[in-house]
Amino acid sequence: MPYALLHTLHLLAAIGFIGTVFYQVLILAKVKPQFEPGTVEALERALGARTRSVLHGVVLLLYGAGFGLAWEHRQALSAPLASSFATLLTLKIALAVSVFVSFGAVAMLLRSGRMTPALYRLLHWAVLGQMLLIVLLAKAMFYLHW
Image 1 (cartoon, rainbow, N blue to C red):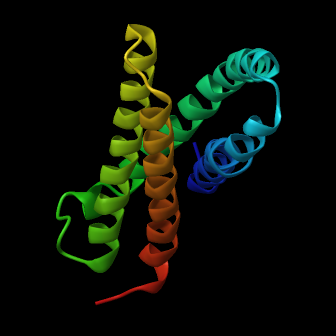
Image 2: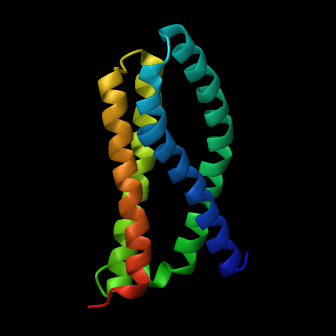
Image 3: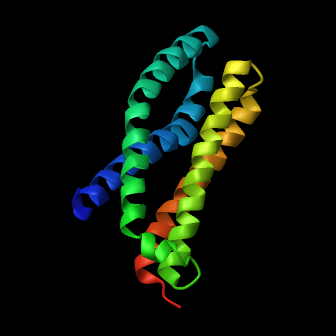
């Protein structure tokens, strides 16, 4: 697949993924207290089901395109400290793995019934922070040089 297409698909999927988490953390979480508890539960069930069905494809596209892009930069990744680009790309990939692990932890905690509202908020804020750092690193890879 051409690099430009991989890069575009990766960017579009990142917009969808980060936008969803941004919406959940900064908008939806602040609106929920304004509704009756029964309404909030119904809304969360409906939005949760729809979000999961859409995000599975988005995440697959995001990480799939990311693997393709990493393959294109395999020479730089073979020496992660040899250049600023390779170092920043390595950090970006490490954060992407961390995001994946964090969402896996959310899923496991939800399934096991051990998720608390406070932990849920904390994990979502942490993931949003990691995602924003990934975006900054993605830009920095092409503008910072040492």
